[in-house]
Image 1 (cartoon, rainbow, N blue to C red):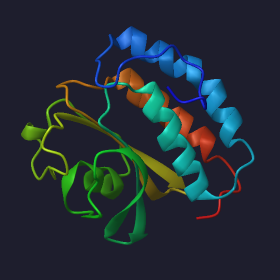
Image 2 (cartoon, rainbow, N blue to C red; image 1 turned 120 degrees about the horizontal axis):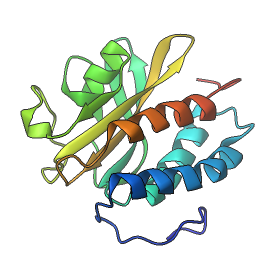
Image 3 (cartoon, helix red, strand yellow; image 1 turned 120 degrees about the vertical axis):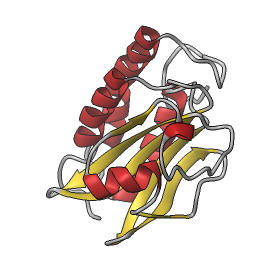
Image 4 (cartoon, rainbow, N blue to C red; image 1 turned 180 degrees about the horizontal axis):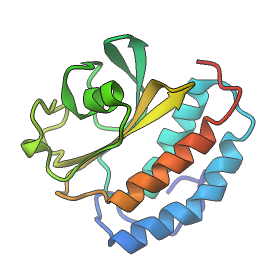
Length: 173
């Protein structure tokens, strides 16, 4: 467990119940927001969120960001976990769909998602949250899990709010 966040330790890879996972996120939320408050550099915020959310989501085998680097391309940003894809075309994968449509993508089983990109063959579920600035997707927060149904709709909604607050104002992209 990192000293950067104060949560009860949970072994990496454990899939807690929905309510336990949401409780961990709610407990960590004030700490996360206090850490990112006033920061204006998008990469610094992404690195901090990737680190702290990695501690929250024990079921994740990847937690990080893909940054929008052109109209049609995402590039890997700060992350924790196994090797990420270096580039993702917006026409492909869960993160591409998230960035293209500007919507949360919650995929219970990635093997059933057309065009899924397998950066890690152990991944079974994925949650992608768009990071918006002035109505434009600037990045995607991506979480992968080796568990089917590794993430819930409630976690997705909580992350939308958290990401919106962390990147709220004055962030330089």
